[in-house]
Length: 120
Image (cartoon, rainbow, N blue to C red):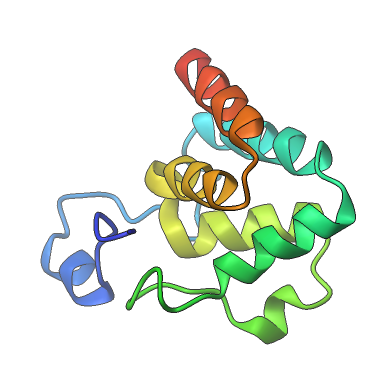
C-alpha cells in the first residue's frame, strides 16, 4: 500500500532530491503539515489512536518503512506525528495517515486531512 515511499538506498542514489526525513526545520510547510496531522489525531478517541498506531508498525503495509513498536508503545500524539514525519517523510506522511484512517474506518478524518492538505 505504501509502495510510493523510497528506500534508503534510493534516497542515497538521488542526492539532488532533498531528504526531508527528520529534518523539517528547513521546510516552511513542516509545521503546517505536522499541525494538521496533530489536529486529526487529537480528534480520535484513545481506542482509535491505538488502532492507528498499530497500523503504523504493521509490516504488512510496507516492507521498507514501519515504526518500531517500542517507539510507538507510549508515544503521545505529538510524538507520533514526529515519528511519522521522520519515517515517511514530509512529502508522503499525509498520504500514509489518510490510508490508515481509511483502514480504521475514520473516513471522516481522512477527508478532513485531505481538505487540510489542499490548503497547505
